[in-house]
Image (cartoon, rainbow, N blue to C red; front, side, top):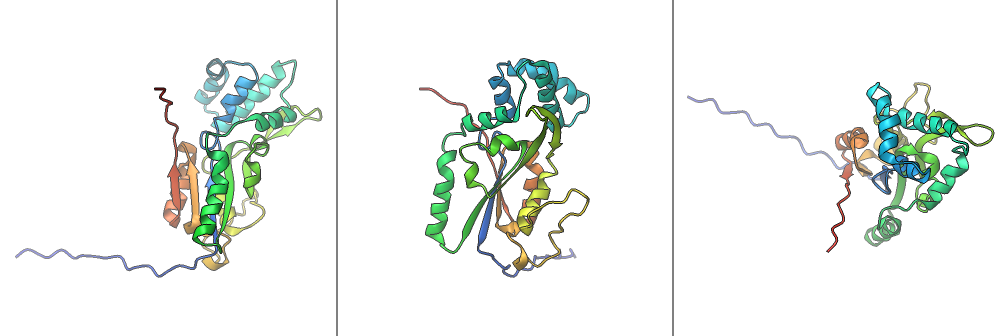
Length: 245
């Protein structure tokens, strides 16, 4: 006699509390605009491929963190130059950076669509990037975001880039997802972190289940994983080659 296999079914989950808020969180480089490191190298009049091969790749091969290596390369380049790389250069670079086609119009269209579907729902946009926060804050789309988190330089008195002040690695991006969920104004760096499961969901600013994350690469995988586990939505984007007919 063959033994019947025991079948197990997941119990249906009860409807969770829903707040009247949805958060859409974006990566920046290669998601909303071209890679800012490469674009900045071009603006400095340098060959991107040569700069990467000569300065960036050896550091990466030596075990440097990707973000730290990028910032260090630029700091050293500034020291080599008569015309230093300054905060004002980054501001002007951000002001002149063009997002990908359709990005500028996307935010108003999303707001409009949400209002059509449910006027009671608030839509919030955020940036979490391993790129230059100073650049993003000065782009033409910066005003659409409730908060922008990115890597930061410390500047000398003359405005020259001097040190890496804040770095956001792949895994650290998830800290800021937790900050969005909690609604806290500050993510502490002294070891005290927000535990998502501590408060009830109706006390959260935006539950993970009502968060959408949009990114393009490996740096976004930890956020993808967190949101997959939390019932949110993740969207991977990539660029298609232009085909001229």
